[in-house]
Image (cartoon, rainbow, N blue to C red; front, side, top):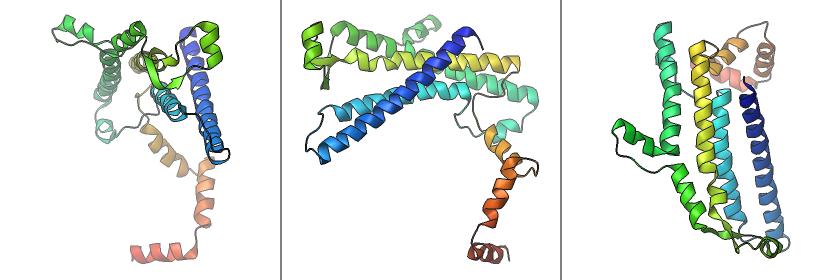
Length: 231
């Protein structure tokens, strides 16, 4: 992995951890404030929704990096190796094109498709107009100190749209290169299910012992019912 890729990796993991912590703290304090002190923060729900949207888009990019997106690959795995690799490359390429279209669709005009808009132009309009969010407001001290409006700028919350799509496209491109180089099989993670089944059937693997122990702890009525079904 390049130095840029490592920095992006650390950035994604740090932001995801911060977002999860912020969501937990916001939800917990809001519940305590509402049910114990009969008060609360008016914009807590909207703030939690924005954090969740950030978490989804960051997670989408990081999931492409670690290969955690699920896929049904039964048919493609039945194909010859070269054809399977071609489909794997096509899948990663679709992710790159998807991110590019939703990030900035105007480039499609160069290939004869009349399309405009995208996440980046939309975010840029919110930045230029300075529209604020409905429920989330700056603290009074911040308004006085930095001469801010009452409502938090919408472009701050919507920054995740172009940022998340850029990161997702970067991760798909990274996966595409690794697949071409033979360092990675697919952009998805369906192979892990097969690997897990192989591990549990391998007596030398630690998961095999765990599976056997779990089976031995099953209640007797479960074994009786299974034997009846088999008969």
